[in-house]
Image 1 (cartoon, rainbow, N blue to C red):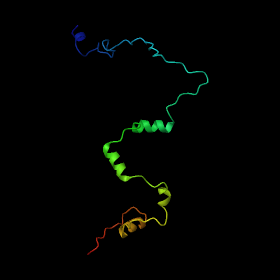
Image 2 (cartoon, one colour):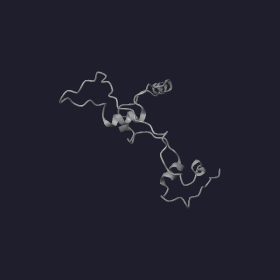
Image 3 (tube, one colour):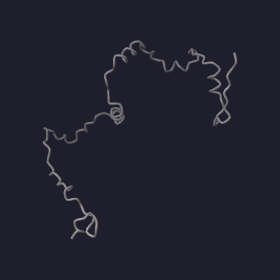
Image 4 (spheres, rainbow, N blue to C red):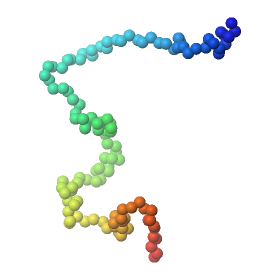
Length: 122
């Protein structure tokens, strides 16, 4: 008799917890909210292209510009219409970055195991 009241023993077995069982609520048909069925043959309404939907999901859609952003855009002004084709033109002025940048760009490809730093004197 004492073994039946204890936590262990031959009567200890795996069983479901009868207090943890819940009944599922019955399904309820929601109200129709005055929805109109689509007309036969009508094009399916869409919310834009897949690319537009992806951009809206990723970036939250169009947002109002902040004062800082508006100020920066006003100070920048407008770009020339053909700026993209003029950038690669030979007449375009560029800033010389110096010999260090040229050396980095012209360096041979490798894992860098033999790389060394040289500090120029003077």
